[in-house]
Length: 239
Image (tube, rainbow, N blue to C red):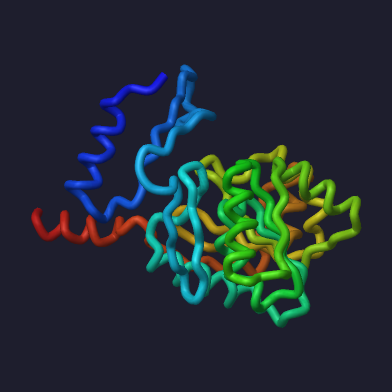
């Protein structure tokens, strides 16, 4: 049921803050920790915003994940590609791909990219983003990460590089158990909230077998995507 005040509030917001391009009302009647509900209503604009990253343009809907700091995101993704050392012959798999940003970012240096994402709206965005940017060597699967890697394994699609940008809870053991055989011969790049790490798949196999996670020849590059270091520095100055 519509309420006129919703539209009034949205229009007032856009009038006071013209940088707002669209306003989406999300309905969540669940009594748990899930933030967004299934139903939405676009009050102002198209329900989507557009962000540019290097020479690519990305359409982002309300339920799609996108790195909140676009300037640092470009630094982060460039460093990821530096670690990956792509030559144009690699099969790249982007797990938890969201709107397809890092996979599409890597597509010009890879033979083929497969993105895996469980949020349907994000996968639709990723497919539109590939088409919008004229990228033809990228496909996207709407599925649980573990189930999708099992399917790709059965299809004989073996990755050379796996890029993982997991949710806050990180990579759970169930996902690793389902994926470990699939990624056995690949380099795995894990992008966390504050760092980017390269793991040889052997480390993940050790974890899967129940022993302590062994990381061989790992590389870690700290990244501050949330401007935390600046805020800490400013706080220190005031002390």
